[in-house]
Length: 294
Image (cartoon, rainbow, N blue to C red; front, side, top):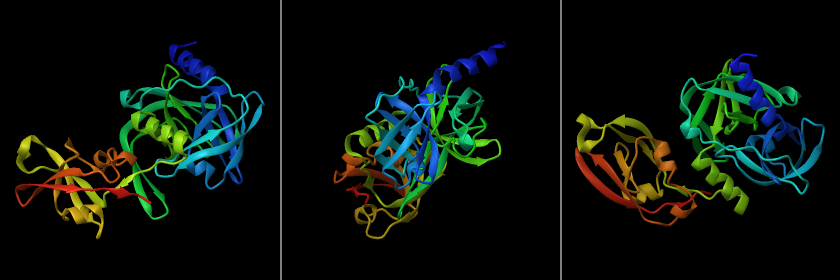
């Protein structure tokens, strides 16, 4: 057997027993065992259901309940009172490089224990999500050409060492699949779901796009141009304006919306947040106080 086949086979052997097919009402998908009592899947797989069933490749079944779901990251945590297989090893998607081998394990079209392989096609993709009137962009999404089909959602995307680096979330077209990265941000989200059943987020009220800093001034090449400041929002009350070029938020450099989103978790609610912008050629400092996103 060639080295490529050996690698894929080894990953499949490690993960197939640890990825379940899950069903919630009319919805179905996959889920990854992350502890002896918990699995992670996509929020869109569970929908508004509270209970469901997980089926494993060895024929065993367990009842599961939704411990928490976060549509804005498309992640959900499932819990069971019955014993689960050994959990997967989690990797870090921040260490991935384009062209790297990845293996997808899931239950597409109800076919349990299906394995496909491909490469990381691109990194840093953005996946728009919505929960009622609230919208967000899932940052640093992994794009892969490993074949994904309906039912793969919530399954594992693993590196050549068998470490899970992504949770497959969307089939965007032929040869184009997307996965929510496993990194510090998603671990933080899962921890919040484990503790509270939900993720509290702070709200600033801006819409922006990446933009160059004129002539590379202030030692920066890129910032985020505000395309909209929501009337009555914390950003509006702080004096931010449409057209401002945001350079720093919370004293950290910002080049895109994700740079702000990383700072808008629960602990930022009600806490003064310094923002530095370039306006009409001059540096302007304001202090915004984020409210809770409801």
